Image (cartoon, rainbow, N blue to C red):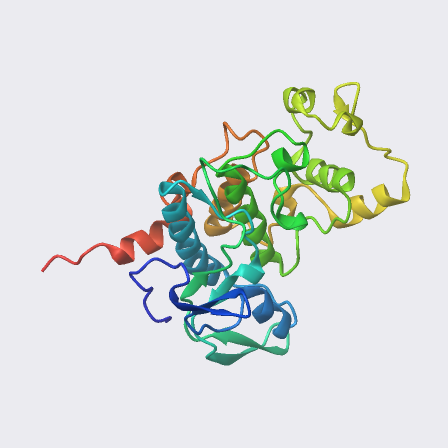
Length: 276
């Protein structure tokens, strides 16, 4: 059993600030490693379904709080989600014959609000770290809070796989990876893009015979093919991911809606007050 979730918002707290040589320095609460650091130190052993559920529920509540306050984080990734504690246990997996670390406490905090943007502020054209960047950002269609939802979809599948879903280094290649995993980008979105060099005959302008395409086919497969089992909780997770990794912003799930997805039902039941 893990310790219970903190009832407070899972956003990092500023404790103080001061100026040093014309720089503003912010004092934050002391936290543990990032979820990326934990995966890295654990030889990229994926998180379990229970761990993903607990961590995701907190992240969704934290970012939903930002969205209700008309703020978009714009840089959600495993490096910006920190465990509150560094404490961990060691667990032996007999089936796989290896030892791996397990967090003692799954409480997390979302950090790094350096590029967070209010709805009324100027929206930079390019936001988010590449691997977590939403298609509307790449296609220069304009973006809103929904780009955070896409980023978190990429984060959750990374927790499940132990590796990034879209390990691209080029915008066009990134879009081609998306198509391999999620199917073709809708033509109406390609028509609207300002990046006309990405489009040819109302389709993504991608040379399928290229060497890069071989790598894409090797590393990217349809989303549901990443499922390790066919049990109910994995079906629920992948249904949630499908709703989050939706090309069309108007059809993409919101985080308020995502918190009521069946995947989180066990946590909601735990939080219901017990009748005497």
